[in-house]
Length: 545
Image (cartoon, rainbow, N blue to C red; front, side, top):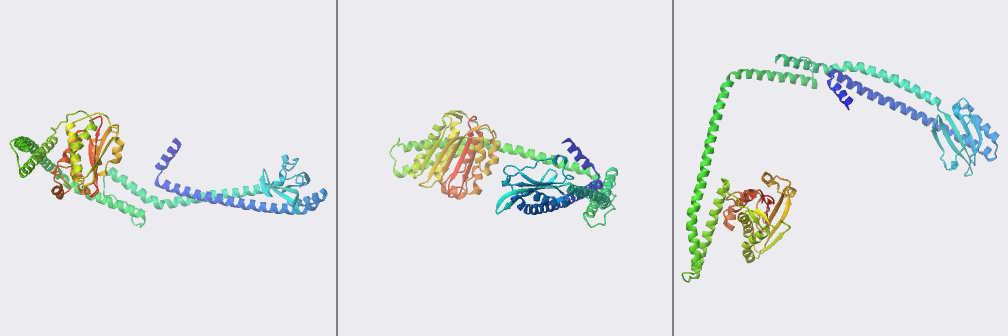
């Protein structure tokens, strides 16, 4: 690995001239080497094929000629036939076997046989009749094996050895010629490469020298002259470099001209920034004062309005209870309208005041141990009568959750009340409301939060090891348009003005619920489609609540 790294460093540090030469040489070497190897292998294949076919033909002729000699057990005639191979100067031996695989007659050329093969007892294996007629290489010989048939029966076999010495000499000659041609071609390629590389490298080297001179002297009047009139990429490079230097030179002159005015410009910008900073500080103070004034006003307004409203509510209840005499049906209807309006106005004042407290950071949670299952059931009591009146079916599923959790019971009940009353208000007669409560982990939240809420949710929820209680309220009501989904959690916001006219409400309930959930270090989101209902989900951490 270290050597490879060092070799790579050497290649990177070579000059462009040497790199081009090296590329040409490597390419030429690979091409020449491939061509040489292909030529040698092709010639060897042809030689091997010719020898194989020649040897196969000789074996077939000898085998056919020896058929009668084997049939009549005439070994002398068989030897005479085999001795005709003396004219084949490459045949080392030929052995004839009878139908039992025993040597019947043979011919040996002692000059071609190796010392170790001269006294070899050439017998056939037991299963020789199942062997294929073939030609193959065994050691220093081409060996042809040919079975001899008579009337479809195997009566013997012939084994002929062909000496490979001549072929090896021929291969050696080919390799010598190939190496001579290869190295001669390499030398010629090197001489050509050293001439050709200058066409590419010279303008680049001149450009590099000019860059070095400009860097050292700072003289942007220098230009590259070599290759400027070429129409190829090198010419484009040289002309582009000269144009770039010209632009730098022009900008340098402009910078020099503006340098004298730079200090005044900096002072002017500093004064503008100081003025803007003072204005921003003043506006922040004004906003803080306005917020304080708003909070004070809301607190005073709450006190001033609560007193007469409580009186109106109290006297209305007294009249409805008929403590001071009977009232007729119309009077009772009017008094009920007064009572409901007063309670609605008091609830609106409480919501506005709670939002104001949250904005200035004065709302505090009063946590205590609460049975969450009972809290859900008590919250449902507030909508069961209305749901039954309109034929709305309520389904509650509470899975395994802790028996008690720590939270602000009043505020969490307010959240549940807002979600459930909204579901009952927007669900048409005969619809459904489903409440589902279970424990989830951080991964579930990550996989199920809609993309439009992810950024807001994970600003608050960022502890992967935490466990959360999830509450989902699903209805089959009118649904929410996609463009209105996110703004419904803002104060005084509803889907559109027609929603307020049709169903009533001020748009404070969801905004207040979202802030209460955030105070519990949780998150809330909604999934909805127009005319297909809505699904509100909030999660709060088990350890935090």
